[in-house]
Image 1 (tube, rainbow, N blue to C red):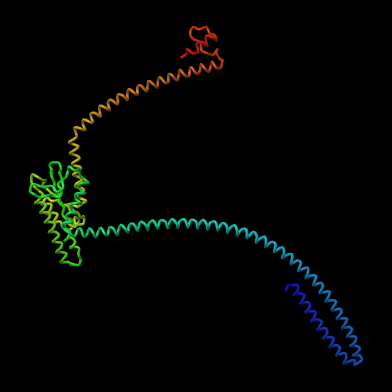
Image 2 (cartoon, one colour; image 1 turned 90 degrees about the vertical axis):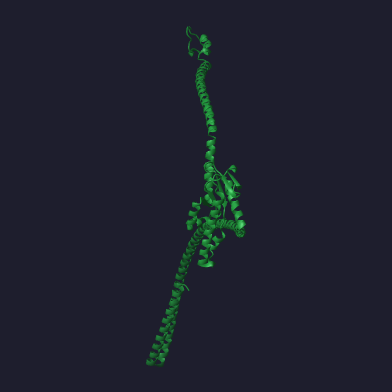
Amino acid sequence: MTQTEILLAALLGVALLLLSWTVFRLSRLRDELAERLGDELGEQLALNLGEQHRALLRDLHEGLGRQTDRIGEHARADRELLQRGLAAASVQLSRSIQVLTRSVDGRLESIAGHVNQRLDEGFRKTNETFASVMARLATIDEAQKKIDGLTTNVVSLQELLGDKRARGAFGEVQLEALVQNALPPDAYEFQAALPNGTRADCVLTLPPPTGQVAVDAKFPLENYHRMFDSSLGEPGRRAAQQAFRADVRRHVDAIASKYILPGVTSDGAVMFLPAEAVFAEVHAYHPEVVAHAQQKRVWIVSPTTLMAVLNTARAVLKDVETRRQIHVIKDALGKLAKDFHRFDERMNALARHIEQANKDVQDVQTSSRKISAHFHTIESARLDELPAGPGEAGGAGSSSSRAGTGD
């Protein structure tokens, strides 16, 4: 319900109230007059009052009609004004909604582009990560296969090292590989026979005064393992430690007695331990065994320290060979000096020829420029500008005949 309709209803209500109140007052007046004037006067008055009442009602109805018409006109005007305002507001609202819609559409397109770009980048990075993960998984699978193979090899190695003969063969093979990789073939001999009837695993032939050095591989592994067996208890481990020291001392004594021969070999020999852990155990916790070996002139080495010894031996052999070939080197250097002197002489001669050729080229260029200048003068028909020769009286013909004789 609009405000105009509410106002119209209120006015109608007020008019009805006034009408009711007027009727009520007239009824009271009629009753009072009827009582005072009597029945006739009351009837006459009632008639007059009725007529007045009807006239008043007509006037009231006419006033209410006119008022209602004015209220209707005002209501129509208000409705038209309200409709025009609503139409203008609707148009403005439509325009604002269109502008907002275009802005929202633009922002949504921009956001969609950024989202698609981020999604593409995310997919690309995810694919790269997935490919990297797959490559690493393949690497891990390959490493797992290698670990499985290594486990099998370790088990096989443990079975191999469980037998004394197998351990000895393993040490000899490792010794042979190290020596062959470090020294020339004429500097060593495997399973070499000595005058006392023994055979050394390897004999190194070094220049004097060192001479022949015997190398024997030993692998005291059983008692070494028992030293770290926790199930034996402390007394058992001490017993294994003493047995390990005894094994090493026995090997040292055997090498000193078999492979150190005065006048045949050097005054020392080498005991090769194929395991770095055994070598570290001996030198770290059994210094008395190392001192005993040094007293017996037996040098205990591991694969790493044996490589140092072999590299030193190779350097000595190379130095001896260099000294042996020093006269050949001197002859070669002398020939090289003569060749270089000859090269220097020929280089100086070539430099002189080049310098002379450069001078000749400059002279030829000077003559060429002069000849070109003469030809240019002739082509320009400026024959009178040609330089006159000595003893010449001058003239165009004689100048032309002498143009080509200039330097």
